[in-house]
Image 1 (cartoon, rainbow, N blue to C red):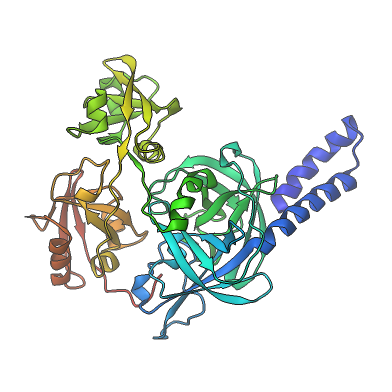
Image 2: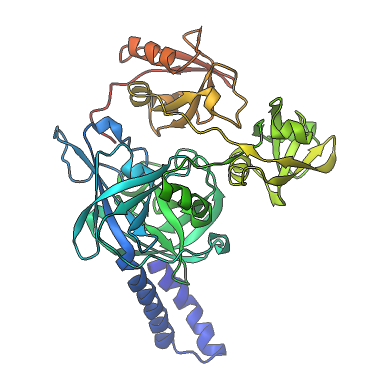
Length: 458
């Protein structure tokens, strides 16, 4: 709020000099508009309280920080608090998947303090959203807007429930777009916000100047548990346009179909730019084309540099995966590639991305900080057959300290080839705290020292 007021005050002298606008009246109009937008959205926002029997069942790598409502050392159910908002008049509530993950019981607390048990209708872990349903309570839904209108500097309002303080309003601006953070959402290009966000805000609606929801708050950096050299006041939101297509499937509890191209890709590094004759450094390198895939049928070759999909520029591997995943299955997509210094356009018919398999259970994820799955579940991969793929790495964990990253393929552990999750789990179980595990990935070797199994989510 201070930043917005200071920025506004800097403009006021010019306004008075050139437009004859009085400072007080302009500031009052800004305040009234913010109040009206917040008042229109607040009734549709709810507090989401999720309970889980086992602390380890709800990993706290994202919002909302420490478990809400349970002191340290308490052996009772873990309670996690977040936010959500009505998206239709039938009682459907949208929130983030990480708030309700593995919850045995979910309660929605409305703006008037009334509580009602909610039913989980559908989840989309790759997009990090979940849809809840209430049996009796109703509220007018928050109108969904167009997140493609957002630009760096666009003002936004967030209405959430930080620390259980219902209907709290925070002001901010869009700091950037197209952010890709796999630990937050596997398939979404995120919107970066500069705003004051706290535990309990995950799932809150991000509203634009039109009073329409343009994003769903998903995670923050820094905040109450700020660490040295980490920024505070930066958070990430899922753009509502990426979530809208999944709402009918979530409502019906159906599996969500997503697009697949069938290529293994890597970042176009400065060293590779000269090799593949791309002076501007834009695009991603095709390292592998899966036989019989849509990419193979379209004529994509290993060594091609993919520069755009349907006219939208591609600047990172994660961005390409997100663009293809958002394409309707069976639709035609124009793929702009650079080959031998010449740019050409290929047409591919988008295939169907395989549904993700469940991640490995604890202790590997808990002790190492890894979220993993069979390589066969990763459609647009490039992983060696029979290996295990890292889907996420918890910040500050043993795996993160060793240098492992999301997207790595685990080929060997302690010089033994890994053929699946069960083999990885067995090796980790055999390794005592303080012992060492030698991981081999296509990027090289990494030494991981397992920690103790967590007693509660961080």
